[in-house]
Length: 422
Ligand SMILES: Nc1ncnc2c1ncn2[C@@H]1O[C@H](COP(=O)(O)OP(=O)(O)OP(=O)(O)O)[C@@H](O)[C@H]1O
Image (cartoon, rainbow, N blue to C red; front, side, top):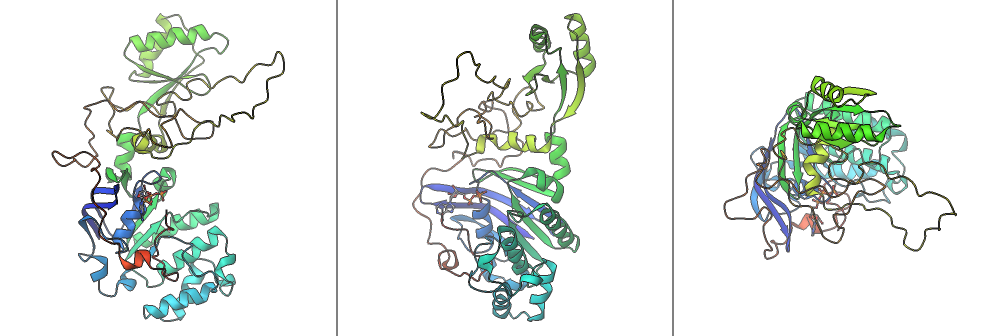
């Protein structure tokens, strides 16, 4: 079992991880989720003794990693698939790792077969694709047949067959009673792979629960209602009637309305009373991806914005119309239904950033716009309570103690090598 208690890591005045406490148990796949820069890799590095916590502790089987007897045989990790000596052949790379840990050479050929790299075993890894590199990293993690496995974004760069393989591998390893801790920012992938989820945002715990509980706690039901496309006034009329009746109405991309807080028969009655014809009235459930986005939206550090193409846009030809904006796009919660409790957001997340990357409106290419700030005072049932008298993210502190030698020293053959310097 991996256990973190009050884990905090500061880099100068940057708090990467704050007061994180959780347990990762054997026999199941635990997904570790959070937006870019939320502290997943930092946490994994601390688990592996590659970074020293500023405060708090993290242990594997009751020991800090560096005190763990025969650690390479007990813990396997894939942190950064690129952290290999590119001039070495895949087999030589694994062989050197095996020799360092007293693992027999025949095990190298076994793991090469497990990850499907046996045919390229003699090829230099610098010629490997991203996906092949990931497979080599996974082979290195499996080398010591460890009971505890950590994978940081293992499906990065893998093709669909590779993704399926990783998913099944994680499950099989957990079914053998091992502790499997997998980081990702893809909720959809974790929903298929993990049994348990630990979700962080800006280094703080947002959720620690089974996938089943996460689904039932976060997948809000909603109704999709569509009025005749040719009569937009009916849509407005219905929208007002539903809002007056206590419903929460959001426009959908295709012109339909997304309604929460009212049962389907009531929506039908209200439409009838308002003399509005309906083309569609259907029950839906928000996807887990949406629930995750909603949970972490206030803790996203990096947001895309619309590409304004300043000075690059051609004037429209005479008489041409600019493209129609998508209804609702860019509004808070456009992509997600409101939280189940109408009284407020179920997740009190840190205020969206106004930093160098901005809390800008929805971009044409992806990330949703800065959401409305969570309602003040709404309790977050999943957040770790902040210590009395302290802000959620601690203010600037003196730089942390020097990181562990392994974190800064180049050790290209080490599968637990940290990510590239950021
Ligand atoms: N060695 C370091 N020095 C300074 N800041 C760091 C260092 N390592 C990480 N950080 C900062 O700590 C924060 C958390 O980074 P971390 O890599 O742990 O996030 P992450 O959740 O793994 O992100 P991603 O999903 O993008 O890989 C980021 O703001 C990052 O810039």
